[in-house]
Image 1 (cartoon, rainbow, N blue to C red):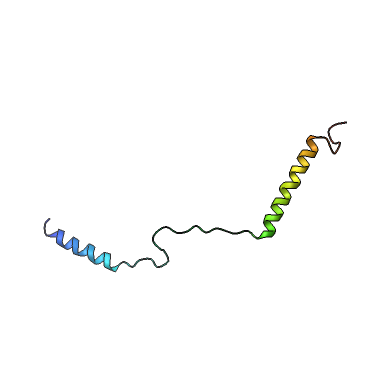
Image 2 (image 1 turned 180 degrees about the vertical axis):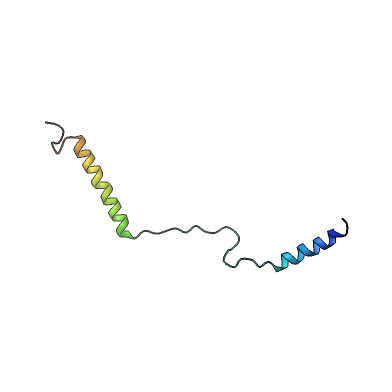
Length: 69
């Protein structure tokens, strides 16, 4: 078995040298990719939330006469 050990070491060293590093991957911590929404989408989202709040308050206080006679 002592004859195989130096051969295995040489083989492993040769394999490590032959394997190229992947070029597309960078090592280390990366900043996360954050998607910035356009201002129009933010405005529409805020508008929808405000309208839903007004409708819920209106129904709960009976402003529209839907549930309370």
